[in-house]
Length: 278
Ligand code: PMV
Image 1 (spheres, rainbow, N blue to C red):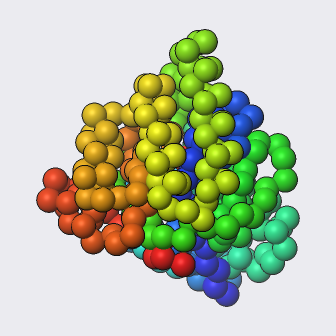
Image 2 (spheres, protein in one colour):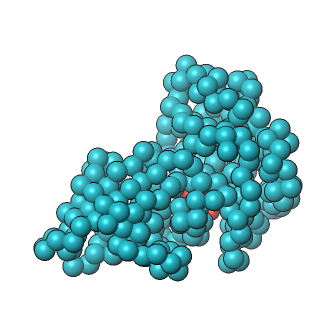
């Protein structure tokens, strides 16, 4: 049996979402497919994705769903790992589907068992986007809602290092009253973004402003700022870091991905068109 699921990007609202504000997450056009065949004996996993360092975690996550082995899994993916594009959630949902789970509750329950190995205490946002494949309005502890997607292309540029989510969340917590004020500003911005989600120009301006807030919170890096600047210089509607920061990717809303991708490549950064225009 086969299961497939896609990755995600946080469009806006990261960090503020930890404090009860909404976040908007979008699906990306990059997917993980898992083929599952029952077999006698130990679990056999075929893939060419994980580095030896991550292999133990992959095995541990899979052992949650296959405690007694009894499966041959073949994993294929075009999602880059560990850059904030939700690769582990896509894998977890694809495995659940390959095992025959069909209802949202069953898929989410199985996928979350794996995600907890990869992420400790995940909010469930990545799994929800991987499962739905739609743009989501997410508030912690509330039912997830589907909203329209921005009607433009989106690119992601990898800064080349990955941030540590727990460390970045702690940094914001340590920011005291000044950080609280910025968090409230981001919360207001996410509501505004929802109102203009179908207008790339206005949405882009808000996303660039969201990046400036995240920079003030101390979760950006000189490299992420450099990438945001090069995206804007290449005529992106807007650009910001996406995810916890401290590394990871920058997302940019664009009319045409090519100039931004070329300019990123010239500066030594790998990038992908993660959504084509709808
Ligand atoms: O880096 P990601 O894609 O896992 O996103 C982290 C988002 C935060 O808001 C910083 C943390 C969280 O749990 O929501």
